[in-house]
Amino acid sequence: MNALLTRNRWVGGVLLLLAVLVGTWVVAKGNFGLQSIVTVAAVYVVLAVSLDLVAGYVGLYSLGHAGLFAIGAYGTTLLSRYLHLDVFLLLPIVIVGAGIVGALLGALSLRVSGLYFSITTFIFTIIVYVVLSNSSWTMGLQGLSGPIFPAFPLAVQNVLGRSVVWAVAAVLIVAVVIVWSIRASAFYPVLLAVRDAEPYARANGVRTALVKVGVFALSAGLAAMAGWVFSFLVYQSPGQFGWVQSVYLLVMVIIGGMNTRFGPILGAVLVSVFPFVVKIDPFWQNVVFGAVFVAVIVFFPRGIVGIAEQLVRRIRGRGQARRGVEEREAAITEVEVAPIAEAAQQGEPAEEVALAARGIRFGYVPGVPVLRDVDMIVRRGTIHGLIGPNGSGKSTLVNLISGELRPASGSIELGGVRVERLGAPARPRHGLMRTFQSAVLVRELSLRENTTIGLYSTVRGIAARSVIWPLLPGARRDGRELRARASTALAAVGLDASWHPMPVRDVPHGVEQLTQLASSIVSEPSVLVLDEPLAGLSGAEVTHVAQILRRLRERGVTVIVIEHQTRFIFDNCDDVTVLAAGELVTSGAAAEVRENERVREVYLGQ
Image: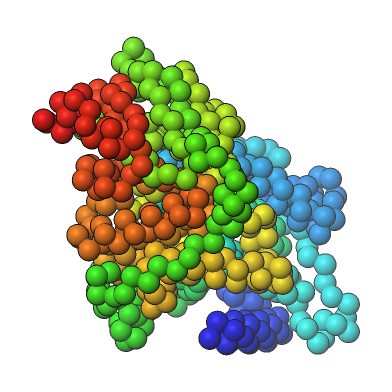
């Protein structure tokens, strides 16, 4: 089935490419008026696709793409005019230049986010506009003409038509191929996790800050590439690159459908062609256009393509299934943890320490400690419970162990390696994975796609290869392996194949929690930290989770469980650590801790 789907996609891609080439030939041989409308629309398609890469994929709503567009257009024109550089040499120059600027803008997202990031990029566009408008070397508001694109030899021109039209088509194809390749790659679920569930992405080894900067730099390079080819088409003036253009670009993406394959393309075509189709007074053009945009935002927030996709899902009957885990057989398949199993067979001592936190002190506010000299020693191949009243510091300790926080003092060792100064993305490389109290998955992705995110740290070069993923046999092979391992992990937590392609938004809470568990075991960790895995589960589902944990322990995985259900903890854990008011109450064998008078007093209320 997957092979047939892949073949159909390749056939569809080839047919689409042929259609673009035929259309380019028709336009290149057509009249100048047709060429002007189509080429400018194609440039805006490239810009919309580049903006969707950051807004739709990683949630960075940029209003700075008009400024990046200007860097490409004015950079090409000025370097050609004053330094007489070849126009083809100028293409990589403006791409790299805009990419560097984009990386700097992307770095701002690490300091500000949401509306504040949009405002910051908006100010960037205004600065670019002011510089272009008030500089003598740009001819100010008067503007300047761009370089002339080299023509085909006469014999070729008679067959293919105007060369600059083919240049526009080439830029369009490159931009769309790059963005669609990323969408088809194993990196795409990771990007959506950065957008919607950043802690989940970091816990799976994703350096989210680097991803944001890199994606914004790539998007900036694509915008500059659009500017490069735009410089050959029109007389340039600052007004073409002002803040209004940035808003229009965002409107294109939203109207067409953000984070959809064809949405930005359709939106760019509609918005750029609108003035030529609706030939009325410019004032009323803006009124009609604004009314359409508001209607789409209010009634169809997913855009035109989003509406179409929703209708298709309804026709196919997707999203209607609501099944509880208790309705299906809990067939837990064996989780592949070969390295751990082999180590156990070689006679490793049962008392070997998997994780050791010693002398941990931490406070969110200076002078107000949340944890005071806490120790927690976890034996390899055991289930270790962490309990305590609300406010005892359990979640803080878990975040310190998983790298979300750094202790003020003390040490944390994983397998004998000090890791307390390493961030969360480094923990999976040392064999630690975790889940969260409430499932933090990407709701629009399937269970299988969410689970593949857990394998990010195990496969090299996912991000770098994503821009040409479908063209690389090795990448396609890795993609198949990732999907197969994700399916195995989902089966291991009791979810049969019928669940795997379903979007998270369409499954019950219990299945969502099991999916989060599957994503944490798929990379075969040596230490697994579960933060309240029973939250919202039914009695049957709790029993199901207990079976999974025991099966993991049998295979040598060390499991740390933070949970309020003390009966579950004492019935299933080998050892238990108890915290109260940020201090260690006791830690030891579950049976001994259960009988500890101090534990009964501060936690069990006895």
